[in-house]
Image (tube, rainbow, N blue to C red; front, side, top):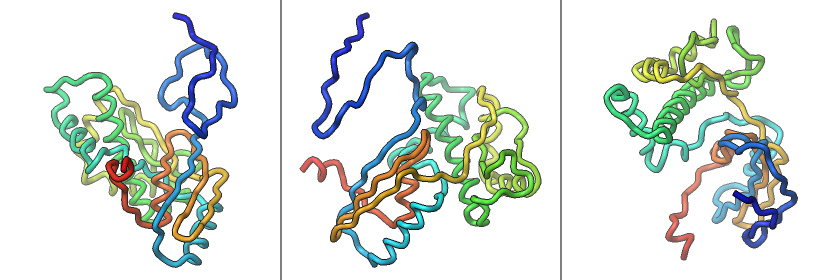
Length: 229
């Protein structure tokens, strides 16, 4: 079919800087970075403490958690993933749904390991047995876990409550991978005006803005109906 070179229609306030043809289809995850502008309203709390916290975030890494959106509203995706892992030999699902279940399960296990390393205050520090040059956690799958020593001990302790998830993930075609425990925002800026805080920053592929927000404070989501109103 013919691909039009005409400039696509964009929402108000958006500007297309460049476009070009590509030799193959772009797949999920094939991005360099995402840029965010987030406006937080009805702020409560001490502004001085908030400013100090934001300055720390601009200069330092934050835990690289998978965000809550990965697990669905009320953890619904996680419940479906657990059901699939327990019954994967007896039930059939489509390729997309299967991939979602597996990615949700791996993300949950990674977050469990990261939370253990945060509690141990070692998520930014390489320990004996670290398989990479920077601290990392497992995306579970087939193969011998590469972590050794103290890292292996911490990961085993974190994953022990979910041991019944590990074997299914090893027998569905997934290969052991690693994911960094820390993320560093890029071009982090903020502006606070009264009760409104506006944040601007960029993140790499697979990193979640909600993981940055959780380091700032507690937030209440606005329902879609309220946004529409």
